[in-house]
Length: 314
Image (cartoon, rainbow, N blue to C red):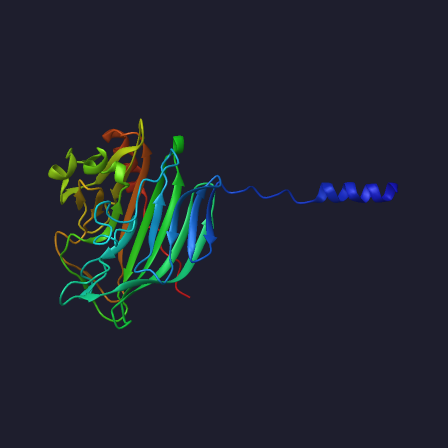
């Protein structure tokens, strides 16, 4: 008996200590979804299923636990059902419309199809997911491929940062992203945050306020903040990285609750064959109507971060 107790005690002493549980986790879910979580609570969810017109992120959860984004326009759910919370797309890529769900006359309607998850990573400092996607024309031919990374990083007081890296690749021939205000990054805010529907406020780094002063104006950042509950204000700031093409980017925004980084509004961009176009943005998810000084500090921190290469292709 004593020998058995000795063996059990020795086994307990020699047992490996449990590994620390990462604070930030990227949790794969059924139906091609990935949940980015902090301390077990979801911050956002990636929808990747091939049955969709494009991958998107929904919702964005604010510090209060409420949704800061929505699917579709609050007063035009059919005409703007392509407003998928947070998404990448473009109206005129290689002659194909990837922006809308219904092409107009003489337009080719494309779709962005998820191909595979490249990497999932859990650490105390970030929950990360990398994916590969194909931009397909109506015949199923690839106009572009992309690799993208979404990294959720915790900040103080329940706030957080969602870093979004996009690498566009033209593998067969140069591909033109034509001049348009619709592309590449869009964010559709919750109805109660909109200027028109909820009494929110748009601000940019240049001191502009609301659509009349911010519409298609270049800026380092644009913020949309408003009520998410009685007495509770929260918001999202899009941060444009200084290494991006056409920085500071013109922001397309509306009082009806949406904003987007219109990187090709100044003019067309060409994605060269075998020379990727790299873009970096971040969403700063904050409580209150964050002061310009506080937002600027987040932008400076993001601006100092360098591009991290995607893993080499296998």
